[in-house]
Length: 405
Image (cartoon, rainbow, N blue to C red; front, side, top):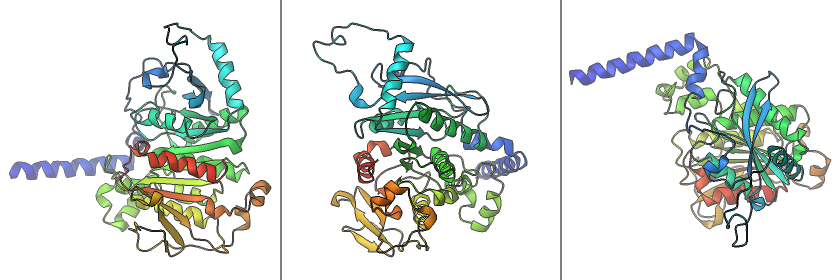
């Protein structure tokens, strides 16, 4: 009993010491938040993406220079339908090999990118790199959503094969904008770009779309998978790195310490200024970032497009067997089952803010901007396994088709 008490006391002292250190030295916080030093998997040569299940010749390595002259690495992945067919008559089946010259490969990819129907610009979560765990599997799903779907994914500075510097919010913002500019510079109209973020990457993606909207540039859409309200808010609920987790039951104390978190990524604010089609997806069994984060972002996104405020739906734990109007919202089971629930605004004669109106082409379609916000809650989805659920792939395809992206 004495040993257990001593161990518990030591753990408390360690936590208090760690908390004091990260408050006194905020430059330590990126190491806890981004976990960029977790370098897994170890990749010998980033040119060979077939090591992660991609077809040979379907992925090219790209290098992007940021405004502050940092070099970040990434992949450009071709649509599934452009993969070489395997048949008894093909060179692949006969065992023939062909090493495509790098110059020819770049020209082939550039030509295909200019003809892209859509390009998914993907920002991954913390730790690891763009090839970690389920990330490559999700890229493959995106390239198969519809014909002509390309994927561009990057590693932020300090991650993967990007320049080895400590990532910061300001630096990663430059990485995100540089990746977007790389796509546009290769002949893709912004309206054909869908920005995608998972976990940590949702803050990056939301910031990018808000920044572009402020400049009058509208991307085709934004997809957020397992998002968070802000890094300080996530720190209260994130059990993997329990920075502020012990204060989750003490809102006033937590609010005080949140002010000392140096990396903000405040999606709660940024999402209100975005007027492109938005899809939020969250797992009901996400124990790292609770669904409350996505529900709050959904509410803020809707309110950012309206001339008046909509309140949070009550009760919050709603899983109706039939479509049900709850307050200002309609919540319906997808496919009539329990696998997922779609939240949309129940709007009748809902006035829009003048500043949130889309361009002339979108206005002529008669689709209200508030109706372009979807939230899908996957009942049995976790934080890192959303890609395994067919409803997520089908939901993305249906959302893109409904909004003509």
